Length: 288
Image (cartoon, rainbow, N blue to C red; front, side):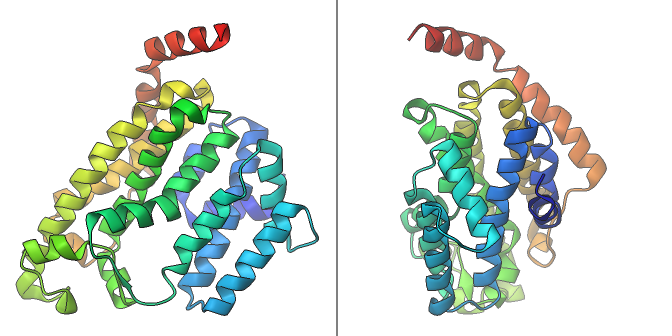
């Protein structure tokens, strides 16, 4: 078992780590290796990464995908991608999305936001779908929707942190409609208007969570449980932000461990609720 990969997900995302424990042993380890690569690349860019850093990540990733000698984190990624037939375009698309974070970020429209969310999260949903042996001919839309939903939740949670890094992911068109001066996004006199935009963002995320959850039936049951738990925990972050009101902009929202354990039960129920649809899908899938 890869201790480095396990430690990376345990430290980087306790929510995803908890959900991943419901995978089979081999799938769990591959999930951790994929997460470690994603986190490593994201951390390089978040730490003030330059275009040279991005180019190094791309070169090393391509080496790993090709099975050429490379650092372990990239070699592990390549091993996982070859094992699960993950197309090279997915990890490279993710790096292209990370590349947008090198300079100051200014999202102009909802369409541009959806495109960015796809690059940095939707493709992760597609890679995870490959790991879980889902048929992307039917599961692709749900996988992208769930990944995008989680990214929108991250954006809603990190408004202050992102702004202080020179990044505004809330669409400028939405900010203009709410009469928000984006240059002074955190000003107290427009806190309510900014929160109204956050509410709008989380409403879109909720719609995407619903679309993503509709694809649980395409996954093997243990995988469906793990994904349902992750979605349950992440969507609760959004609800906690809404309940906290404009004050949520000033401090990062977290879900406590006891609450996560409760939400794991909610996620299990969500996976069980798809049993009828699952039976019908897998019966027809077996016949085809």
